[in-house]
Length: 116
Image (cartoon, rainbow, N blue to C red; front, side, top):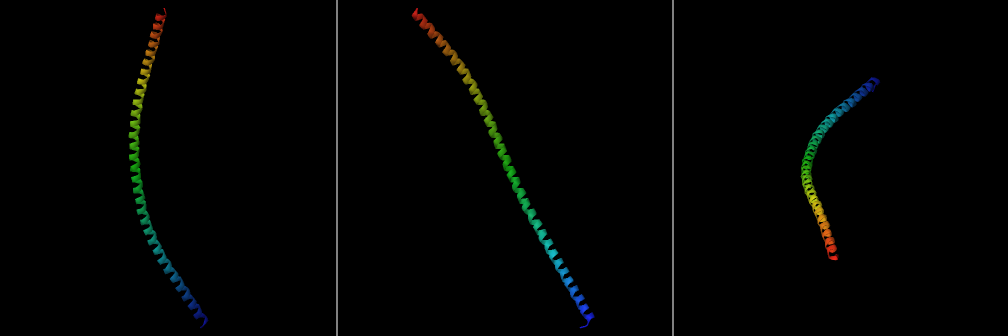
């Protein structure tokens, strides 16, 4: 083989190598694009599911909040009733103290009357 033939073979070989590399790179890029696209679709679906689940959790928390508000209202009613009972006990205590004072006064008066 002559030197020009060697150079031609080297040029053909390198051109073939670059062509194969170019075709393979294009094929790989197509595959990567398809895979990234399918991954994007799958991730979007999963994120939609996650968003749906979070919406459900939010709805349940709102229900729990409503129930807590109802419980708070009931506790406020119970507190008001206890305050009423407390006032009644205070009033009864004052009446009992007054009766106790009157009984002591009457007992002293009776004891003083029997001594004289």
